[in-house]
Length: 94
Image (cartoon, rainbow, N blue to C red; front, side):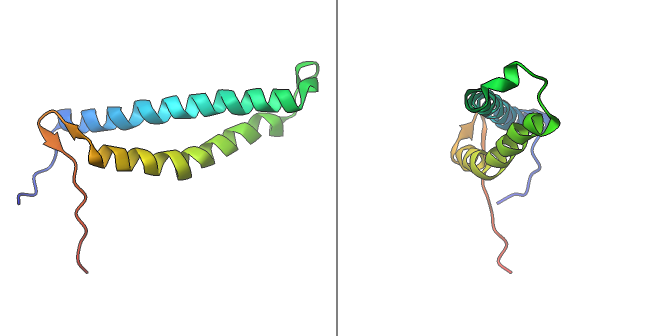
């Protein structure tokens, strides 16, 4: 087994696969959280919303993406194969 570092192109492919999936999940969840918040509190459209209303969906979505979406994406990337290479997790036996 050789410990060869990924090339720039391979790193870019893996990074892009992770990036677009994470950004799309983040945006979909953000729109859903904002829509749900406006559904629960329709008076926000008539007045200037306080700062916590803007930060609450952002914090919730960031937590969901970090602890629910990201582990799923990493598992999916490790099971996927890319043209010419495949990611593999190797644990150290300490």
